[in-house]
Structures are given as structure tokens and as C-alpha cells.
Length: 422
Image (cartoon, rainbow, N blue to C red):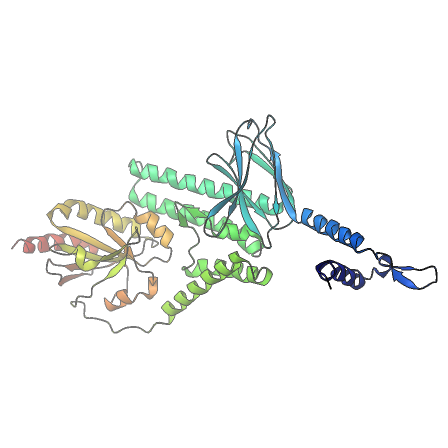
């Protein structure tokens, strides 16, 4: 049996037979006996080619439109993968700015973007749909319409929400740097901005966790950091909802495997933290070294910071109501005595790593975070039961004071700095 018979004729016969269209492949002979109407293998081969071409043609999606005032400019179509951005196609826009891209449809929802110089329009495709985009050149990423895709409309809304959130964050950052707002106003403002985005994005996620827009909302970033933290107990539920739904609908998709892996890992970490046995507490005078990640994600040891200095080890949570006032009080003392050999090693027990980074980025002392949050073994070993909690180390690295009342902190710092000079 030759290749044409094996790969073209037999599958066609089986397909027609299985579909119930026997009359299309059989006919009566002059003697009344059934015979194949398409007896010529060449005819069947042509039919097979036509069917293949038709399927191929209909197995593509289209993105088309007109870019206002875009004549002579180059428009790119890019695929946003889980790890990189890949240029798929490009076109130099004509006098009317028209464009049309046709690409094979993805097997599962995937993400694309149109790029004009440094401006982007985010899109999602999951079928052989035709998406019509009408932007202008001057404000390409903001001033555009989208038709033909419900998910692309949702992604547009989420993109605008993220842009607005990012602008609010940048504006707050400028106000703080120019000293038009205080530190406590800055910290409270950051939390409000993040909470507002999460509230809106959660609606998109929970309305349809299997959608492309839910996935898109989950992985949005502000200032280069994920807004939804997979290692936060509350945020992890969002990852779980989307991961479970994508795994049911698109189990073989690379995005699904990546998302399920991320969620599974976060679940393991969270459960380990929750189920860890309480370690034996150390005496408050016993030194226990600490090494935790800083804002720049590099590990910093307490013993390295404290060499030859009077150091305050401060356990706190930026999400607590009194955190802004607490840090303002510390800032006054730090600025007054830092030149005399006073240092602060501040350990955050916040659940929201992103919030902590934004709140701590402008503080002048060493800021680190314990990923175990409220399950912190370090805090337990230092017998910390309330926040804030502090310990003062002398220049030799010995604990010389436990701070029961932060109102006494400055007096203690002065006393230990004086002893350091003896």
C-alpha cells in the first residue's frame, strides 16, 4: 500500500464513513451494484489537499485595524510567553495605517501584544477569532478601540487599571521624595493603592477563573513586583482558583504547568510554615544571629551590621496601624545618633512582600523580611509575642537591653553609645 493510500485515501474513507455521509462516497453502478464514486486516487488526493488547505486557512486568528497617523511607521506583533517576548511579525504601515496579522491559533489561551516603538497594546487569543484594533500613533497604548474579542476588552480594562495604579504609585513616590508628604502618609498611601487594585482585580479573577483575563490580572506588576504574592496566604487563593480552572480546561498548556507549579510550591511553603513545631525559646540575653533577604533580595546578617556598633534589632509589621508612627520615631533617633555608631536592623513580619518593599524602600537603615511572617522561627527564638519588639546589642554583639517601652529607646541608645566609647 503506497503512501497516498495510507495517509490520504484510507483516512478520508474512514472519516466519511464515520460521519454518516456514505452517500457521498458511494453510487449505483449501471448494474445496480454499489461502487466507489471517487475511484480515481488523483481525485481523492486533490480532495484531501483541498480539505487540508481549508482547515489550515480556518485554523488561524486575525488581528487587523488602522493606526491613525501611522504612515511609514513599523508595527510589531509579539507573543508574550511565560519567560520572554517573541517577535512574530511586523509591517510597515501604509498611507491609511492599515495592518493585518494572521497567525496559527494557539491550543490554549495565549497572550500577544501590538508594539509601536515603546508603546504596547495587550491582547489575548484563544480561537480563530478576528480582533479589530483602532489606535492612534500619538497615544497608541491608551487611545484605542477593540472589537471581536470579549477577553481582549477585559484585558484592556485591566491594563488601564494597572497603568492608573502605577501612576498613583509614582506620584506618591515623588511626593514623598520631595517631602510634601510624611513617611506615615506615604506608607498608608501605598497600602491604599495596592488594596484598591487587588479589590478590582479580584473581581476579574473570581468572575471567571478559567479566563485569559483572570490569568492576566493575576500576573500584573507594579514597579516590577507582582501585586498578588503567591506566598501570601490570601493571594495564594487567587493563584489556586486560576490554576485549578486552567488545569481542568487546558491541562497540557505550558502556562498551565507553570501556574500549577507555582501554586503547588507556594502551598507547600505556606503549609510548612503553618505546621512547623514551635522551637525552643532562647533566653532574651542569648545572641541568635539572623540572615534574611533585604529589599534588594540579598541576604544580610545581623552580625555583619552590628560589628563595632550599637544596634537596635527591631521586629515590626508595616501593615500594622501604628507602623508609620513607629518608623517616624525610629527615624528621628537614627538620624540623631547614626554618625555616633548607632545602627538599626529591622525585621518585617509582613505577609505582603510587595507592600513591605514599597513601604521600606526609602528608610535609611537595614530592612529585611522574614518569609515565614507570623510563623517566624526567629521571632519565636527571641521570644517576641507583640509588635513592635526590640533588642539592643552592644559593640561586642551581646544583647544588653530588651525594649519593653519604645519611649525609653533614645535614653537606652545614648547610654550604650556612651559605654561603647569606654
